[in-house]
Length: 246
Image 1 (cartoon, rainbow, N blue to C red):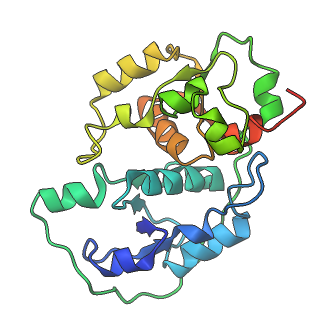
Image 2 (cartoon, rainbow, N blue to C red; image 1 turned 90 degrees about the vertical axis):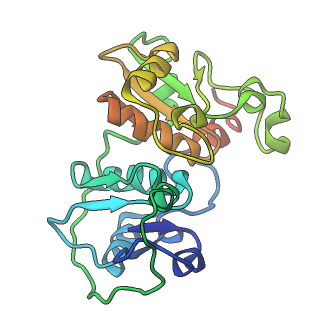
C-alpha cells in the first residue's frame, strides 16, 4: 500500500502493483483531544477495503514520506492488525535508489473485506499519562525538535503552552533514520542506544508523543521494532499543552 495524502503523488510513480491508501481517510484535523486525530474504525476499515485489503493478507506500507507510512502503521496496529502489517524500510526513495522500477499504472483489484477490532491498550490519554508521571517504568519520549521541546517556539504560534510533558525525554524522530534524504531506519544497535538515552530501559513501556501525532508515529514504529511495549498519545502536545487541569 502506497500511503499518502495526495493521490497525485501515487499516480506520478509507485511500486508496481502497489495500491493507493488514502491517509485522509485515516486521520483528520479535528479539535485537540486524545485519540481524535484518528478517524473512527468504520472509516479506517472502509479505506482499507477500498484499497482491496482483506482478512489474512500481509500489509506492507510505504510512502515517499516516512511519517506517512509510520502513521498508517500505528493506525493499523491500533485497529487490530498487529502482526499483519509492516513498513518498507526507506520507502519509495530507497526503492528508487536501488534502481528498481516504478509504475504509473494502477493495478486492477476488487474491494476487500476485513474485520477490525480496536486495541484499547495502545492509545493513551492525558489523564493516563498524568497518573503515571512518577512511574520509573514509563518512558515518555517527545519526538519534536529542540525549539518545540524547550518551548522556544512559543507553543507553536500560541496554539498551545510552550514546553513539554514533565519528565519526558526528547528524541527528535529524524535521529531514528539515516538522513532525511535517505530515510532508512538506523541499525538496531544505534536505535537501542537512542532509546536507552531517552530513558527506555529493557522492560520499560515507551509512550510516544509529538505535537499532533505524526512525528511520534515513527517513534512508535521504531520502539515496536525494538520490542518495547509501546503506547501512543494521539492528542500529543496539542492536547496536553492546552489543558488547564494538568
